Length: 455
Image (cartoon, rainbow, N blue to C red; front, side, top):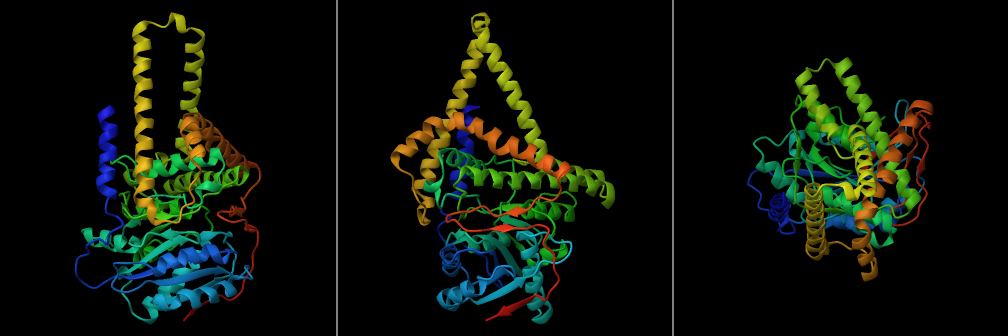
């Protein structure tokens, strides 16, 4: 038990060290990297950080093509694009824009936007210019993403390291620390735990991507690009990839980081949690329909089902969390009321359990301190005060339990109620880093022309 904790962190130390350095990439024709940045009413200072990190990528034989994927409902996107073109266009292979207009059977959100942009990239690069779509690496990043300078190089190195990397999804560690100092105490505890769990995951588990990930353009086309009427586009894309491979795991982890913004406000973070859990509810429904309507063989379907069920934050794992909390609370009440009657051997076992939990928390903070002092130094992170760090360390065990109720169980119940009694959930892009209006009405429908421009 105690040794396994140390071994797990040692594994990640070896995995992550040197990720800032440019990786060795086997010879052969270089990949064509295309990065889609989905944007809706994003301020220029947020976009500027993202595009600056894209223009500063190292270790590639040619710079990436970047697609600024805008929404027609955003009147400010052209001005933002022109500023980005002037500042970064000369440092990229090409800088394109796409304008997505919501049509029937789509819901407002990232999935519909990137689905349109990716299809236009396929049309231009494959159908018009004849490129091999499996030699085009498509990366999806949020508008507030700051990429490690070697991120795309690590994606290409991981692709070349596979026996056949064409039908896999490449995913780096989750990190939302860029504006960490802005968060309230409970949100900071929540995001510390969430990012830590994803970065230092079990060596026997493969985490799902969150927002930022890469796959070949050919693979994206093979799975039908992105489903424009789903909210959890990242989770759903990986589950579709597993369907395509008949239940095999398709995610490859890379050591390079992308640093995003967290949602700082308590209420805004709850809205984001509800959106996440809405995705878990709809994904469970999709899995049920997959078994009933697609005719997938049971072993393949079961592999996809168990992968989704064991994913942190999935509907089924949330039900398991509720059961765990009920058992822990009941046990705590019983032990408190009858502590004098508890046998000495049981007290000894409880003390061992407490020691193990304390050991886990010790290594949690050792790993976090090491991470903040090494790999995260490459990002413009807003650090909290020393007093806030002390408050985080002291309150983390308590707030971690409270956050499971506030930001996991309650949003799941809320999303389930909404699905049963209300209907479609509007896509709400919570403010991150700076305050900005970002409410997208889900019932907005129109048909109009769409286009993609290249410079």
